[in-house]
Image 1 (cartoon, rainbow, N blue to C red):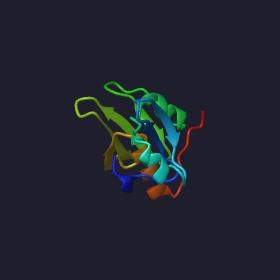
Image 2 (image 1 turned 90 degrees about the vertical axis):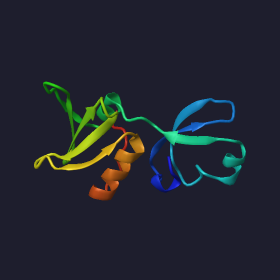
Image 3 (image 1 turned 135 degrees about the vertical axis):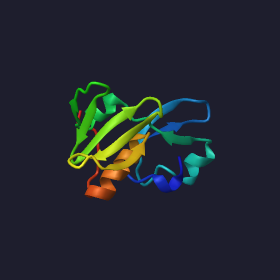
Image 4 (image 1 turned 45 degrees about the horizontal axis):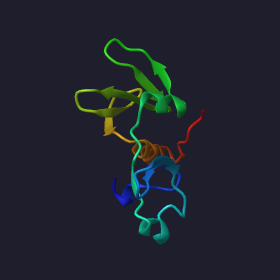
Length: 120
């Protein structure tokens, strides 16, 4: 995960210097010098079906895979590539592929101007 991929409000993992990992929401104090000196590291939270539901996606069962609808986007998992594919819902135009929660949050913010957070 690169620093330029992270925005305030993103869900990421924080791992301390002894290996304890927890999910956090980035705020303006997340990357302070003090925290970095303690040996903490940050990584992306893998996007899962459960998380998509927590973000308020509607689920439509398909023959080969399930579709997840979020606003004007359709997402589906391609197991052979290990990515979520994002399409424009109406035209089915390919937009991008994503793997982590912060990537979906950033996509929604960039294209819709909205912050994506868990509804459940």
